[in-house]
Image (cartoon, rainbow, N blue to C red):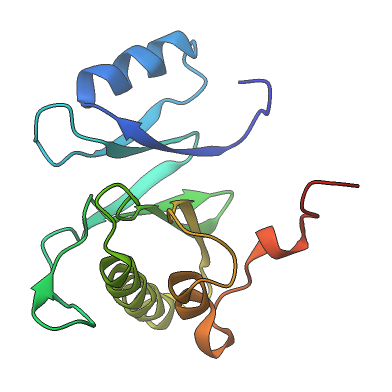
Length: 168
């Protein structure tokens, strides 16, 4: 609340009831809330809170994605796409929570990144004047194949690259 952000993306929200409690605790600061719930018990779902008007919500969890090691996979959690109108502009916020490193499957994270980039590029073509933001938990480190994939072709500008790492 102290950040006074217009949009907040959350990961590891268990269900819509938890999101509603959080939204209520924020005292009405975020009248719009969109949940990307998988429906599994104790799931680690995503939610997007906003002050903006929601125009469209697209969910992508059920896409079949080719796994780089062979076979097929899906997004491990909902890859939530929320279109909003903010001060006359379309803003498209993607909320990601890729496969964790518990029972690691780096190929799945790479597959998720490949499909995520494809989906974001399609939205950019559909709405060329929109501001498109990817936020969330990619569950990987800088210069990893999933992050490199998301930045491939110069489509994305990763702001985190500009933040100095710890130390000095």
